[in-house]
Image 1 (spheres, one colour):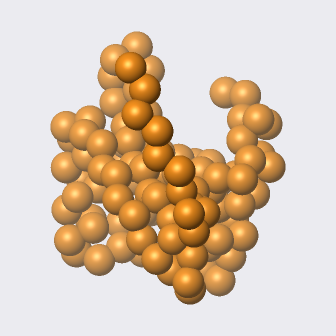
Image 2: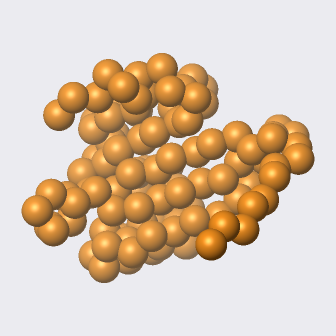
Length: 110
């Protein structure tokens, strides 16, 4: 899989396989989680709370999406967790984390 277009993107991208093993992190994801060391090859289940493990397990089983916002160290972010599929089969999960500007415009288009 070609991943270079995500390498320097201004969005943190982490990808895990169906067993929850982290198989890819772009540069910003590596920086974001650097205090935990190199997470490639580690399980998502090792670094999450019991409630988060339950949610991740549900998402891997059902192919559901989880979207929410957080504020961390004064920065508001949107977190998008969604299934990674190939030919319709759930192969794992992706998490995208994007910092949001303080004043985010909203448009309604028809």
